[in-house]
Every structure is written in C-alpha cells, then in structure tokens.
Length: 377
Ligand SMILES: Nc1ncnc2c1ncn2[C@@H]1O[C@H](COP(=O)(O)OP(=O)(O)OP(=O)(O)O)[C@@H](O)[C@H]1O
Ligand SMILES: [Mg+2]
Image (cartoon, rainbow, N blue to C red):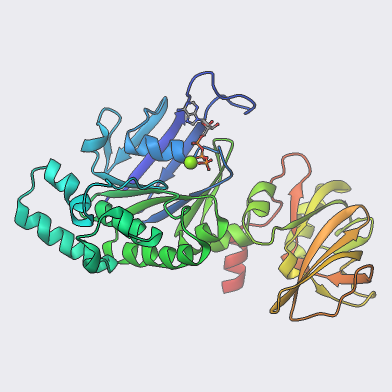
C-alpha cells in the first residue's frame, strides 16, 4: 500500500505533438492519492492518460515535477524497483508458458523460494477463480480468463501500486461489466492503491473512488463520481460525464431568466445570485437529457421543439428535438407515444440547470460544498 503523489508533473516528448495549446503531452499534473485509493483516469484519446501511467511506472521520465511513492521521490528509481505492477490492454501472456508459469515468472526472476511462489499462485488463483486453469496455455483460455491471468500475474507480486491501462478494452460488453465488478471486489480485498485508465465514462463512474478527467494533457477536474455528475467544473466535464450527454444551449441572461429561440428557463437562487453581478450576459445553459420531462405550454421553465428522432428502449424513450436551430435530446421515462414531427414542450427544474461562462466555459455557481451543506442543513 502506498500514497502516490504527483507534483506539477509534465511530459514533453519533443516536437511530435502538434495542435495542442501547450506542447506537453501531460501538463501541470497534481494529485495526491489516499493510501489504498482507486483512482480512475478518464478522457478522450490522446489526452495523456497512458503517458501519466508510464511516468508513474518509470517507463517514461517526467520532464517536469516530482513523483513520490510513499514519500520517496522515484525519479531516479528504475521501473523494476518501484514496486508497481501493471496490467495493460494487450496483456501479453507468454504463449509457451502455462498459466501457473506466467504467474510465477516475476517471482522466479526475483529468486523467491519455490514454496512461497506456489503459495502466492494458489492464493491469487483462488481469488480470481482460475484454480482449474493453472496448467493450461494462454491459447486455451477465453478472453476473460486471459484477463484474469494477467491480473493474477500482477497480484502475486504484492505491489505497492497497481497500474491498469484499459485492461478490459479487448473484452465484449457483457464480460467487461463482469470483470469490472471483479476488479472492484479485488481492490476492496487487497486495498492496494490503484490507477485505472479508461475512456469509457460508465466504467469510470462505476469503478472510481475519485476520477481524474483529462483533456489535451491537462486535468479538468478531480472529484468523486457523483460530484462530477452534479457539479461539473466546466463544459467539457459536463459533456463528458453522463450518458446520454448533457444538452448545451446558448442563452441570454436577463433578470434571473436565461432564454433563446424556443426556450426560457428561470434560475434558482444560487444561479440568480451569481448572475446578478453579470447582468445581461451570454451563457451556456446545460441540461441533462434525464432531467427533461413533458410539460404543458404554461410551465415557467419550458423548451419547445419538434421531434426528429424517437428511440423506444423499453424503460425509457429517447427523443431528439429541434429547438430553434439546436438539437436537444430528452430521456423520458417509460414508453411514450411520440411521433416524428410532433411539437413537444419540455420542462426541467431550475436546480437541475447548469450554467457555463460563455468564454471560459467554467461552471457558474454550482459547487459541491455550498450545495451539499445546503442539502444537509
Ligand atoms: N512515445 C511518444 N512519442 C511522442 N509522442 C507521444 C508518445 N506517446 C504518446 N505521445 C503523444 O502524447 C499524447 C498523449 O498520448 P497518450 O498515449 O498518453 O494518450 P492516451 O490518453 O493514453 O490516449 P488513448 O486513449 O488513445 O490511449 C498524444 O498526443 C500522443 O500522440
Ligand atoms: Mg492510452
């Protein structure tokens, strides 16, 4: 177990990276884990997740900042002495070795006694439910079983830190869901500080104690899953976390009301207070599809549009509307008889509305501290 600290960590690969505002693949990365924490790194392709992992592992040298494991600066420590075990997307088991031999490999290299190796393999195999597979070769295993062996190989090393970089991306949807539950259980049991990379936001939300959302090498927000959902710090996080994605509408604020062509939404007290000083201003209004519901035309908060797409999913009906010239999606509970071309009026509670600054795209007046203390009061 260990606390991992990244202080102002940056990575510059040289001239290869174009288009980003900074030339760093990872920039100004700051994070201190709790001992035994499960931290998920999430973000679009190329945002620097693997680079961050490789720096923690010591496979890449950070060009700036410090990385500390249990208080020790590891910048001069080679990967094999960092006491870290990694599981990657391509888990690369040795094809000519049995499952047991694959798992024993790192311990043999460390010249551990045979008795200890056997005991560790048995324990790990039991934890992962692969005792009956120990004599098989990797080619005789299913994808999910191979994944377990790769995890087993990491577990037997008793590392201070686990690094898992998209370990489930080779698995089909059903197996992914099973394996992610297994990994969470495993973490509860072993309580080893873990960094887990995914670009699947559902995986991030269900697994992470805290989630680091990255974009273009920069941390956008670090928070618990529920805080990311309820209090996204900026428009990017708001759009990235949550499925289906949040709707964004450009809106004009006047006296506690934001509106545009086809919509008019009145603000709650917190937004009203925050917007009072801004006066008549352009903002982004953000509304999650699951916070929209059908309403009558007289509702204070209303969004009116014509139906373009209807998807009946059983438990919910997904509707896409044209509101003025903007697309809005709504997730309506149950099975709704909605026809293409219908005009619908939707509403949303003011306290579910998000506002973002037009230019900085930072959230306006939605803060976990204020809101959660209000909820407790
Ligand atoms: N060895 C390298 N040399 C030069 N540039 C690199 C190298 N590895 C990664 N990069 C660049 O650094 C940036 C971050 O890459 P990284 O692999 O960390 O992204 P990622 O978030 O893991 O993406 P993905 O989700 O696609 O795996 C990208 O622009 C990538 O092209
Ligand atoms: Mg990657």
